[in-house]
Amino acid sequence: MAKRKIPYTKRATTYDEQIANLRRHGVVISDEAKAKECLADMGYYRLGFYLHPFEITYPCVTSGRSHNVHPGTRIEDAVALYYFDLDLRNILNRYLSRIEVAIRNIFIYELSNKYIDNPTWFVDPNVVTADFISDFPTAAYNSIKKNEVIKRHHHKYIGQYAPAWKTMEYMTLGNIEILYDSLILDKDKKLVSNRFGEPATATFKSYLSAVREVRNACAHGKALFDLNLSFGIRSGKAGAFQGIHRHTFREALIVVNYLLSRISVNRITDMWNEIYDAARELYVKAPSVRSLIEQKTGIRLPSEDI
Image (cartoon, rainbow, N blue to C red; front, side):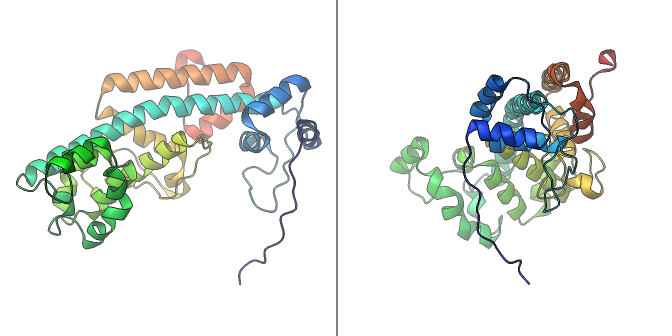
């Protein structure tokens, strides 16, 4: 039986009321002016995502959640965690872009050269599923064909679609993931996955899903350190993932590390140096969150920092 819904009765609150609410839940606020500045910057609702780990009932998000925090929890702790998460999103977004471009280019190169006489192989019923072909116009191409490059192509050439090397350049990572899953032949999928050292195509598909979800979280400002993936990551060359850990940001970061390592060793070093710098800054401002970050993200500073 569906749960009975109830009317929503909460109303908007002022900064003074928000500070009173935080104090009622045990948050230590010693500088009200600074607290109001933080609330104006990030918002009371968003701050709640970063106070959540400090709550006594964490990680509960159901009716049993009390919102009361552990004694001594300062608003500065949650704010520092927020800015660390922001830094982490900005850092990862750059390297995820590098991974996305590499995946797209390998996809285009391998399949376009295999089906060299068919530049629009991505809508060929011998290559991809009928469902993908029927959905492609509304799911992707209606938006893609608004791009000036694609417009110029159609102005000059006949045909319903631009070739793969043009069309796929403007497909989202989600589109690419669906196309990969829609390839009929497993050996076609392997042309892509083997370039990243992962022979199991279902596992590689789970890597694509993880990268997409983390990329979307970065782009849309979701709390990254506490992210739960919709789809579990399969065990493979990136690592052995089991149980609930198949759905965590910690394991997604392992996948990001693995894929980036197949592209550029130098970029791996750069990424981790930036992440470590952000973590060091966090621990100076809020040392109490160190164990949380290590547990939730797997980020551990080099031994010389310990």
